[in-house]
Length: 174
Image (cartoon, rainbow, N blue to C red; front, side, top):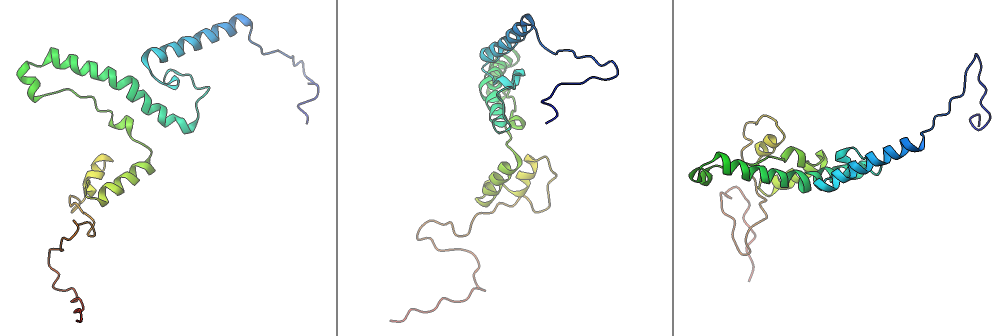
């Protein structure tokens, strides 16, 4: 391994040691502690104030959700209350309200979202156009139809609808 041996400099090259002195190291530690204090005060993940030394790709999404849930949503609720109190009359508060929309910040990764959409579509919660609107896509023709599974019916219920083309069940023999 050529990096383990002595360094040889040619053409007037000089060795300059790259080291941080104790005072600068202490300053960096103090700045990091200050950033951690900010994160503690606002109840937000350390990555949101630039501390990424313990961050991994796997927990970044969870930390983003924690930022919204623990830090931004409580602050937003205070602003919403203040806006309603200061900008709306008592009669207006019965009809209007202020809400921050954190939908974009709370969106999961694409695979998770699409699995949830598929499930919601299969049980009739969303139509195709509902899903397209959530994904900022234009609607499609016929996309406002809701579907439910045909095998879901209350126990003992008989199917309704036109079954004239269906084959007749075999008669039971006595």
